[in-house]
Length: 481
Image (cartoon, rainbow, N blue to C red; front, side, top):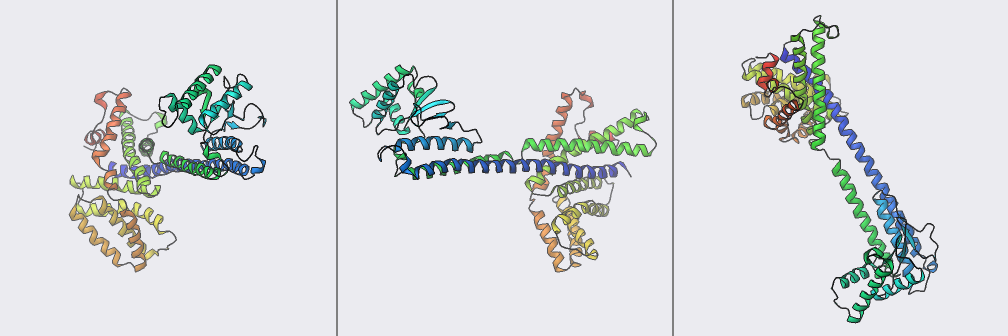
């Protein structure tokens, strides 16, 4: 077995192992995505259960404090706590709003993040501020450190507009009263108004008995939209990525280097040289080191291609690994043909053999439960191998493609309709790859990986003269020239 044949066989093994490693990388990403999507669905159901509690509350108005005109005050409290808890639960956070350990007639109505909160929902911004001041007078110190007030968010917005000079639709008397009361609140609490009095999640009109069910519907609709956005983010975060692709390529490079090293070391062992007994000369170490290096470079290219094929073309990992091996093998045969080392007949025969691995794996993946009789199996595989080989040679060797198409037709004429349809189905799936095959093995694109390896070598202090930058330099190092 010459060195090129040995390298092709070694590369095929490394590519299959890399395919399984990359399949595991993909599987781990998808498993993590499924786990997080499931957790998000669970969080959404919990958020809806928080909303269900407030629905139960408003469905029993006879148990709500106050007259028909004032029940909205306690409804506002229940909506506030439920909506805040639902939002936090949806975001997988611990809910901070609670009625726990709060008496029904206590100075505070509920607690948020360990702070006491009093809710004031009165008709009109000026009147709401009146009630805030009355509460502060009754409960001295409330509104200072450790506590604050909630008022309707539309009223809070109006008050902030007044403080900012926007007073449309308000009388001078009302404007003056609002400013005076805000000033008094700031004086008594020692805080800015925005810290002492904060907006509720609800407007005044939204918590009235005749409106609150629509309000809850709106909040649940918002929760559903937020949940969808969170799930979309999870899916986006678990898409195939450049960083993971680089990880896959790096892993494949390690696999390729290890297989190359081990294969060459085993060959030398069969020749009577034991690496563990100090039998290696400097040339032997250079030989196994070169095999490891070339295996690593090949693994780097193969890993990036396999990652692209499994994630962009939805190939199975075994098929992608075999496919990549076939593509690399054909590229090597084409190089040998152009160098005058093999004839066009040898290129076709060897190319079909190289592609048969991918054809077998592709057939096993696509055939499913279809039983293919042994007499026609060779024709099916021959047709598929010819299709792959023709694709790899697209745009390079038109004469070879014509001869391959003729061979394919010979194969197909020996098949029945059922098996011709099977081949057509497999080729149809294969056609989905489009230009991805050429892109994955485009030298100009893969040069970036070589540049990265050169930069890495320099970072580790490798002498500039010892760094291999081109395939020509690599072939010289390996003794192919």
